[in-house]
Structures are given as structure tokens and as C-alpha cells.
Length: 250
Image 1: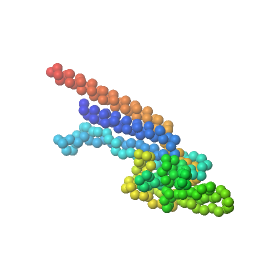
Image 2: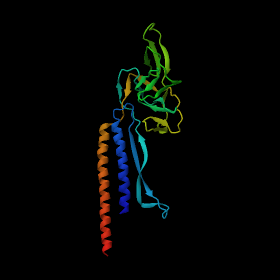
Image 3: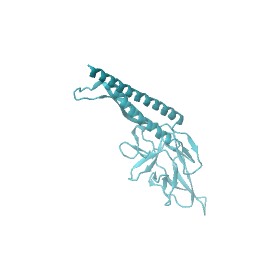
């Protein structure tokens, strides 16, 4: 009976974890630049001191890895000069509170009271030389290479000056790991180099790549799977009780 219990118990536990991931995806279906995540499971033999090679008939279900879907989401036109979407592969760099770098596809930026470009959550957006400072009373435009140009809104309005350039990177997807804040970092904690091939488009945002219909189907499937696993546990318990009664009567 314990073979049933091992498989069903751990399977039900990991099914709940997968359900939580699907719920998180659905909660971020409207989050710009969000990348869907998926938990991948595998079976592991139960190890025993008496059986060095493990117990072949008994296995745990464990969470092998968290997979990220890096497929690009649809582009939404907004018209805001500081709404930036990456075209194709690539990321925009931001600075965390500890000074390290993180990467995002959510290009909904704003200018704070000090003229620094930042994310909606207050993180500094990085340029090739650090933070990007925008002078007051200017109209800005962003080129496809991430260059930020400023045009004075008063006085001589025929002088365009470059005030900065977004740091655009494109590290291998296998080297990226998602943090609890939804931002991505390199596994070794280093900073990715600038990639001149990455291009952006101003006045647009990349939507989440979560397919809400597919996630709802997955949620229903996981709910049915959990119910089946709980029924198996109940059946194993009933069989164990019946076997105990037979042995006790002898």
C-alpha cells in the first residue's frame, strides 16, 4: 500500500505547486513584459540505508525545475514617449537597491522629481553610463537603438541633444534566473554586456505572453489531477484498513 501512498502523496503536493504557478501566471496576464512560468516535475526513487540503490518500487515526485516561457508577447501601442518595447530578443537593464543589475521587458518608464528615468516601482533605469538624467522642460524621443534625444520646449527649439541611451542587453536565456520581484538576473550575479543588435520602439509596450485560455484549461486539468490523487490516497487507506482487519482476525 505504501507504494500508492508515496506516488499519490508527493504527486498531490507538487500538483498544488503547479496550480500556484498557473494562478500566478493568470494574475499577471495584464502585466507588461511578464514571462509565463511552468514547474516541471520528475520522479525520484526513495533512498534507504538498507538499499543503497534505492527502492525501485517507491518514488517521490519532486519539482525538477521552474521553466520560463521566453516567447515574446504582443505589442500594444500607447503613444507615450517613455513606453519602450524591445523588438525581438533582448532586455532593458535596471538597477536594484543593492546596486546590482536586473533585466526586464516591462518598458513603462517615468521621470522622477530629480529628472532620473525610473520604473513604475521606483528602480533606476540604466543607460550605457549609469542612471539616465533628463533635463527639465524638454520633449524627449527614443531611437530604435535606445538613444534618448531631447528637444527644448522653450527658446530655440531647433537644437536636439542626446541625453543618454538605454542599456540594452541580450544574454543567453539559459543564463537568466527569475527573482521573487519578477525581474531576471544572470545566474552568476554579474552584469550583462551591452548588445548593439538589440532594438526598441518608443510609444509601445510589450504585453504579457500568458495565454489566459490555455492557463485556465491547465488549471482545470490540475484540479482534476489533484482529485484523482486524493482518491488514490483514500483507496490506499481503505485497502490498508481491510488488510489490517484480515490480519487481526487470524
